[in-house]
Amino acid sequence: MARQLRKNARDERILALVTDPQVMGLLVTFGGLAAASRIPFHPDPDTNARVQGLAAAAAVLMGLGLWGWLRATSGASVWLTGGGGVVLGAAAYWLVALMLGAPEARQLPGMVLRRTMDGGR
Image (cartoon, rainbow, N blue to C red; front, side, top):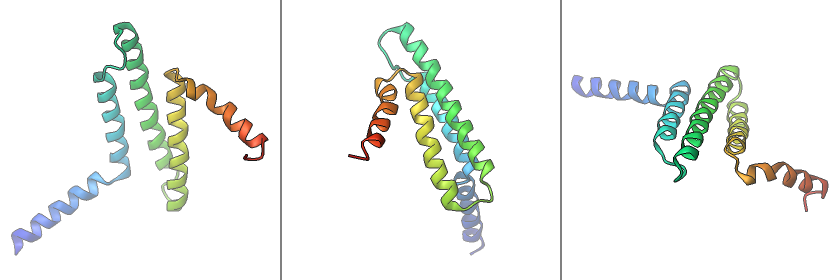
């Protein structure tokens, strides 16, 4: 019985650690850095080195943005924290795509403006 209680307490501590938002932010940042430094994005070595550097910077940017947002909204409503996190994540994703030179990222502001000027049609 005591052995099972100790195992359950250990499992609960591990779960609390892994699901902590700040720990998750660190995992996202360092996981992104690890992936950015290992994944070949382009067959040309020079272009690949440049893109890997941008991808590493993007991972740091996203992790710092998440960390800052969670600190700024630490006592706020879950809806505000979650909703703002989604908006912040989308903005960070767009900025990274813009930094990587994706044509869709450059086209997005024009598409949104056209849609709003047409009244959503």
